Image 1 (cartoon, helix red, strand yellow):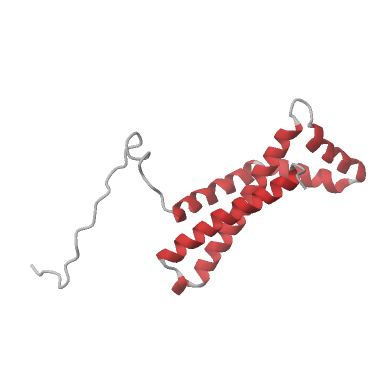
Image 2 (cartoon, rainbow, N blue to C red):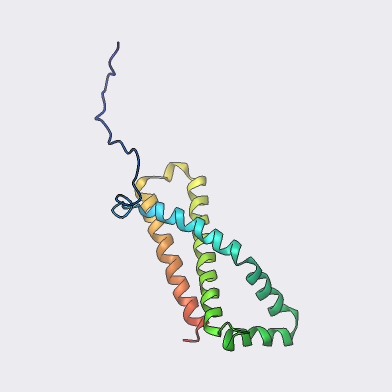
Length: 147
């Protein structure tokens, strides 16, 4: 048998992760968090697609329908209060912003393979998280009438 010229140090082996003991202590890197949230934001946008279509249709159909659109956000409709509609819209805003920024991050990494490093993955993931949350806060303040 031949031996390797440069034997590497043995790597830790991860076999099975126990949901009850290991998941609570497992620390996911920022890039992993962004990856999971990218999928979650896509699912949120898919599930809320009827709400998106309703908002677009109601807001552009006529002046009367636009007034009805604004009234839903102010006073709600049926048994759903207006603040809940605003929270759903805020979740949709976050989902769109996060999905868009994370998508740009993935496109950038796909276009510049040489620039992809562990440090770039970490810093771009932190930027994605921070930018999506900050923009959501700014637009949420506007949505809830702070300015």
